[in-house]
Amino acid sequence: MSEASQNLILALEGLIEAFQQEQRMLFRDRKPTPVQFKVLRWLTRDPEANMSTVAGLLGVRPQTVTPIVDTLEKAGWVRRVRSTADRRESLLLVTPKGKRLLESVQASFYEKLGRALDEAPAPYLATASEVLQIATSALVRDLTRTGAPSGKPKRHTDPGRAVVR
Image 1: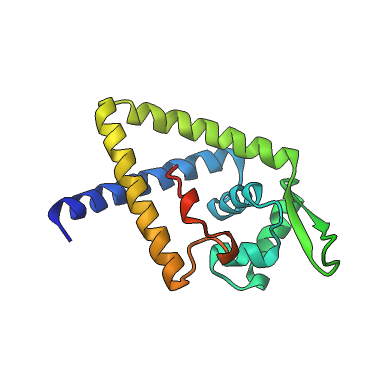
Image 2: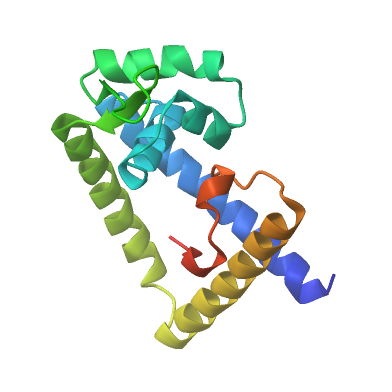
């Protein structure tokens, strides 16, 4: 690994830490936990998600997910709906209230992160974006090749959809 790669990794670790701290501050006002927020975000992207899907996302057993989903449902952010394909299965749908929560947190966070990124010159941002997209594509490609869990259930792994957000 080159020294430049090591320096970028350290910078990314710092950004991730700051990112997580900022999210915790936003969550404190709006009440979801970081895990609940992650699940909500995933559910908006996968209209066919069920408990197994969420368990795969989190890397835990399905029974571990039950209290998380119960809390999301009790808060009115998610609802369970019987699958028409398999009546034994419940799909997890984000409610309008859950979507408003996501939009509120994301808007606040993206606005603050955008202001921070605007301190860098535009050409640096363009280069950083390209580097992150290349690294993301390479990681997704390696995960797809090895069959390792990628934070997404395997059926949704699509290297062409790699997006840095």
